[in-house]
Length: 231
Length: 231
DNA sequence: CGGATCGTTGACAGGTATCAATGCTGGTGG
DNA sequence: CCACCAGCATTGATACCTGTCAACGATCCG
Image (tube, rainbow over all chains, first blue to last red; front, side, top):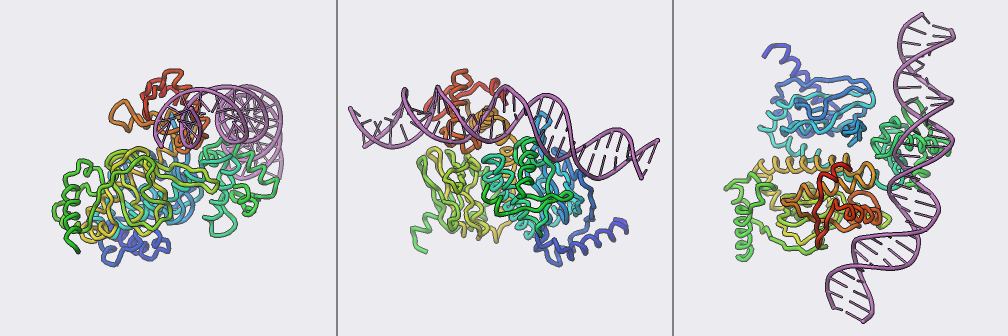
């Protein structure tokens, strides 16, 4: 192993240990000696809106931790349409299916400028062999994801379009740290809720007219009470 | 520990070791010495259609392996309606969220006469502490579930009702070992696909008239080619 | 035989997709 | 600096689909 690589690896591990997002992510309860095992380079990536982390069915080599920004997991349908399967927020993992030998299940595309940690899977597999702590986090991760997905299925895929949009806005608002939150484009909204772009647009426009929603740049503010009445 | 209990435990472990479904389930790569750890009783249960394994938000005490039959995971909506989040087939696990301290996420109800293994969670937690092999299976489980759910989201929750019903029939057929497969009641079908009972009924009736589908008792045969054209 | 449960069908209103046209906005190059 | 363009959002008209409410038929079981 060459010097630069060693330096980089150490930097990665050091950064990782200090990262404020770590406690939410895969390495949450790694300990000092675990970090000593991390010999492979973890790299930071700064991505721009629309960049792709990986594609569906691609041979998987990395797992990603979202540090800032927002990522959509997309599944393309045979007819060219697509469906957004899930959103990834800071602290979430992308591509963790890579750890277990199967191909990526979706395409991961950023919705905003997004910072991620890119972790080679060999790195994690090494760690897995030596420390059971990673397993626990892995399971915790899957479980969280599953719970989210279930709620999605139960609440965002049923009822009238208006209810779905209202629920989506409340969900996005709730995930945001302040009142202002990221508002997806109408096409993405459709792909999230299984409705058409036009329907999404009509409903958003209506909410704006009713003052349930104010938009600004790429984001929005909402009147939670009014929207909860609808949902 | 009393004698009867010891006997029962040993029986359970012995049965489990010999079970033909085991290779698909949680204990897939347990080994001889792992089995020696199983001191708590694993019990067989024979359930009838409509029985409930556990309820949403109930304090979790058991994990179940489905050995034969079919189970639905149900989430009830505030308005009294319900949505079926997932189906569990032989080899699948029910209530595994119990392992990680959270409450059950759904109500599990049998759709047919169903045999399950009922495993106390302490049992598994013991094992977890001593053997990392269970973790791997746990993760594999979550991953399989997630993949299923994703397909569900991508294919069974979009498109016209007719497409959804066609896709559901193809899915049910594909999961069956022979051509004949279990056909859910119309209400359950609606809850699976997020459509109304009446719509489900109309479409099934139409498929029958067109000879895309023949029903018999609780089950059915389909013309796959015709249904694939629709989907 | 009667009753309960589930499936089927009809009529209708309202909702949503579809097709098409028109605004709006941010970025690019002249 | 401005005109233009590309991409997105909005809006309209319409047909179709689906939910809703209601009635009726089929089947099973006591």
